[in-house]
Length: 380
Image 1 (cartoon, rainbow, N blue to C red):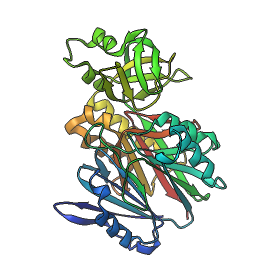
Image 2 (image 1 turned 180 degrees about the vertical axis):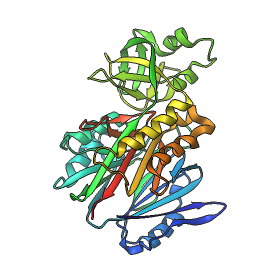
Image 3 (image 1 turned 135 degrees about the vertical axis):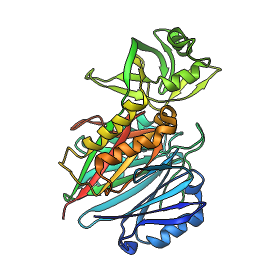
């Protein structure tokens, strides 16, 4: 497996970061960038001219990650040549299916499952229920097949997100990439760095990923009870202190990123399901805990297959972490890169949701507020 990378920015144009003359030999290319640049037909055509035979997967983000740096308003290109691995791709348009579950069910039904070792998903970020997408993906797949990836992001909260397969990024697309063959070893990890505080509460009124009440109290009243005086705007408080849902084993929590608040009906929109009856607590973090979690995710992603030197790491971090880290966002990525070593190519973006197993030999889930990493190592 060989990897080469390049970056485009308005000031510098194309920069070649590594060059192995992959050209026609590359089978897969990841293109991560700003919402504006992933829609640029001229830039896409230039990528296609360089890699005419590759499957090109496009996703927007709220920031681009490449080799220890976080940038904005760039287009980052990572091309891969596999020696002993086959990939197969497919794209689903949200307009062609009934709902988010149906998207996942279509992908899991139509992806070739013979020899499938891993499925990566890059999805529209603001028109989809990520929890339902995962349920649909798992409907026709063995639990032994890990699902990783993420939901596209954007710099401006609540604005459109863009994904594409062999074309510029557009709204409403979900892309699946299947990896086949026993020579490709894939590791994965998702770490948050958040801890619960305050009382446990039950979700008593919700509809899918819209939360109305905790313990029969309107969501803003709940936050006012514990945080009034610290915040003038309780909507801002939900962003800083997201909610963690207790999982079935009771040892972990799935964080849910707050997206928007509807003043008319009092509903708080989250990136994943907020099921009635679930137990939740507020979650808190600090800069150091988030940076440490990113480093832990890098280390953990290399453990399942004893991958000491991965060929590539694809990193999907949450826009909610950006909101907390602010000017320290780069330190999160630096810590992750240090755990890998400077010579390991990394690429990724900041997202509206991250997809990965909840742990070794566990089902994949939608995460928020995590650094989620997929590592690749192809055996000769």
